[in-house]
Length: 528
Figure 1 (cartoon, rainbow, N blue to C red):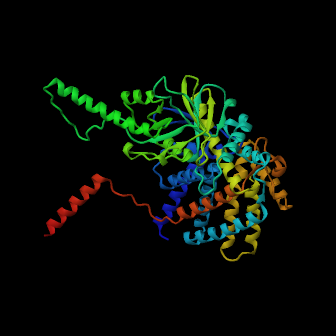
Figure 2 (cartoon, rainbow, N blue to C red):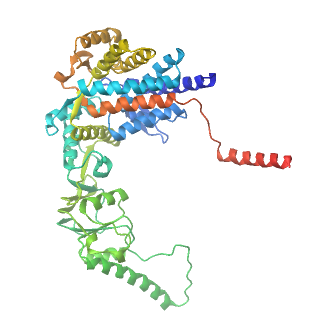
Figure 3 (spheres, one colour):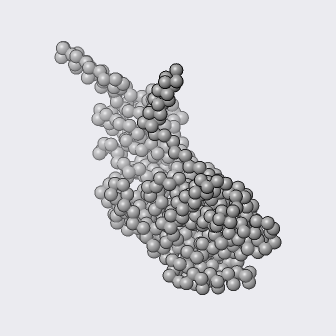
């Protein structure tokens, strides 16, 4: 390995350590808040690891890799975004020590993957326990472990109930469940957080387009459109010169007749509600109102897609192609006024299960933070309901695996001894940071905890609020097994990927490419 490769590894490891140091104090119940000023001048105050990292502007490739790692963890699980970054950075830090001992990067990578298999085997055998997924009390303890460190700690019980109800209303498999597709979070400024609730249906922040249209319909027939209900305008700019007054009236009459023609097609299918992403002309609204049809226009594409899945209807792009099978149904359509805004509720849908979580809060900033915390709670609930296995929290798992790897290193030969010990040292970072954020002596507490683990107390960890050493099962600090195993996998895989890089190459910008091509042509012409 040459000098340049060593410098690249040191450069990447330094970038990873810099990112980890930013969110180091956001781990645990005693975490500190970060104040972020975004590029538009807005202020975000949060202790969510991914929320902090995604607002950071960096050009360092290793730092970007850790930020992407946190994003993937947030999308896949919803929690553990801080832990996975800290663990990956610590693995790179210990790899730096191995590099100074003249270990080759491929030797380190192979050792890391070998240790990963041992970690997962020991974890599944000794630290993973089954749980009844229908028991709300047990699941609420696991959700509380996640969100007690967040802003909504005082409303943790309410958040647990909302997350559990939302997941139970959607009866889908883990692989196919995308939270954003089937669960929508609607934020309403005003009111109290305690008034937040789960609706078994869809909520749209829109009112009917005509003030006299019906706002309450039982068993409505719903038609979804993705087109204008208006006269088609030319795709290119068109100028029409009219010299005769009667011709002008004929032109206006043609537009009016075409709009009436479209409305007559819609009336043939007898829909009670028409919802479209595009616009409807005032004339079309008038005729549809006379036909006792309620209309909602200019909704989001995502809301239209959710409505199509929930009501069993098909989004129509051309009114002339409508068929009877395109009409969807629901149990109730209603429009209610909350605060100063009108909201449309479509409940009792017969298609795929879908629900909406209505959040109330005193300000936009508080609602944004509650939404982030609720997203974590929903992710944890999804993991538990799909894979009902739990594991102790408070750094107990990391320290138990660390002790296991140290014992295993004693029976290994050759250079594996150093690799096992380096990963064992890296895993201790989680309980150490929990103790550090409580303001206690790290060396004293970690020594006591190691002594307890040596006596087969594998479930003992750090109680995050006061830094006490407790049995995590007795005080109810538990985490999903799937989340923990995913953290180990992604952290080690990300560390090995960064270790495999021995060169950093920057591509040319567009201007530089053009100038380079001109230089090549000139040099070829000179040769000729």
